[in-house]
Length: 172
Image (cartoon, rainbow, N blue to C red):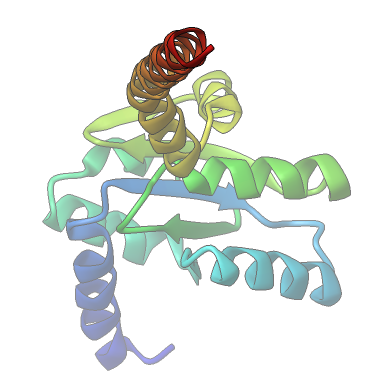
């Protein structure tokens, strides 16, 4: 990379990480080209940006946007993963890949203002997804309503059966 291009790259990185609710730092050493393609494809399918970065340039960008907590984790080969919609989908995809290939390593994560360690990242990966949580919330709200509808329908059927019995009795 030419020296004149570095400020532009730092600005691009700063713009990438500035508004990201979650930034995950990974060590991709040991991955071959086909495994890297598989990882990129899986991340892209979930709307996750994956970018191999130079540590020094990411350090400068992090300091520019007041995310200097990341600097101490910038050792060795580094790639960043970002998602602006749901930062909690990233650890799920990364952990699935790690469990399958056993090569990728998550160095650290910066999620909603906090630097997370590996144990905390693994705990995030085990949480249900946003869609699953929304579905559970809808079911929790809908369950009492559907039960009430069942009770009211049963009462209505009982009333109709009773009225029909009275009508039959009066007709006989």
